[in-house]
Length: 308
Image (cartoon, rainbow, N blue to C red):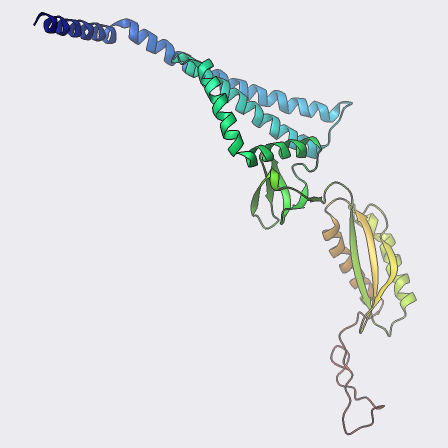
């Protein structure tokens, strides 16, 4: 009975100590200081990120004007990547400091995380491959934000290049998110100047040399009206002989990704000039024979613009 009474007394004493500690000022002072420290950690983290963003943006702006210049496309890629990396680092450090506020053994936690990360790494080979591939994409400058590329069955403008994934936006609005490890072959349309290729059809009845002269005169005028044309478009000559037309090819060097727009402009200008000069652009034709007539006497059906 004495031992049982002593145990009850000890339990009551411990309970009284707990109650005194909870209701006493020491606990609330500790909690208050801990909460204040967490708030300060979060505020300082947000402040560091905000100031860091300004410093990084200003750094790349100075690089654009300094002796060691970088291209605008390269700046957009590196700027976004550095900003994201800085945010991850600051958030991680803030998380560790908050754990220390709660008296967690951070060293033991990091050591355990390292062992677990090593074990997970063997099962996350694709993730490691994506990160390594992303590093080489950025380091080798294979493509940058704003470039128009074709890779892995998708085509569009690069919106973001990260260490693990790349975002490509198609011209119809879809955003494709590709793991960097799947980016094995890339066609970049934005690095060098583009070539606009236009085929113009002329009727067999027309004077080819006269048509070439009219087109060449037009091409000499076009660079003055269209800044995207880097030089005078070149008429290469007769490209093919079709079933009802003679096809002549025109090429022109233009700014990157302007070849589609300039090709449409050249077609419109050539069509209007040929119409003004009375040079016919052909239409499909068919020659028909009647069984009741001699083969050497073809029957002509329809006027110009129909079947003959």
